[in-house]
Image 1 (cartoon, rainbow, N blue to C red):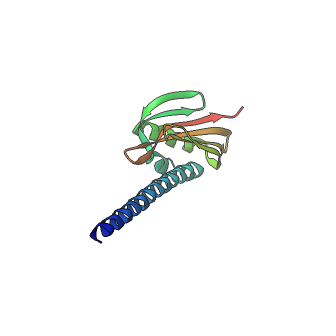
Image 2 (image 1 turned 90 degrees about the vertical axis):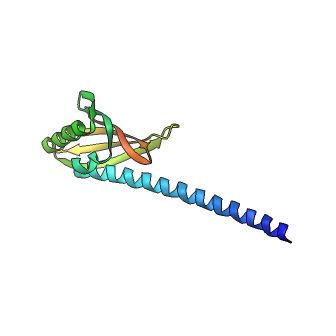
Image 3 (image 1 turned 60 degrees about the horizontal axis):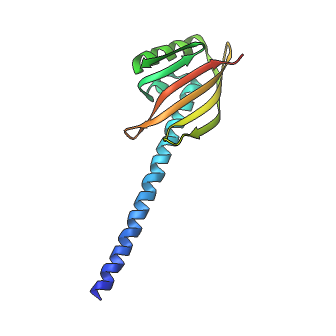
Length: 141
């Protein structure tokens, strides 16, 4: 009888462990979606401050034809200048995807007072937090 109780407890522990793992995975996907939504929302509003909260310590930044790797602080100032000089009127994500290594990307269209840009945002999980690794605003010709 005691042996049956132990087997029953083992089965319950396996079920509880499985449920815990599923919940953890669901929560991590939810946090990643929230971060992606926050990033998209910040771009749509031209809110450099909110956007820069999601930058990694280094960001590959492309604005127009200028492309370089910047520190988080430098990238924030450049994006601030970009949004200040070219007022955002709309932003729409056209496509989202994931690479096999877990990186996530969003391709979209940014409409400003002066032009329309094709956008590309690449994010990666860094210590459990989704961080912008690459940000591109390329003018549509």
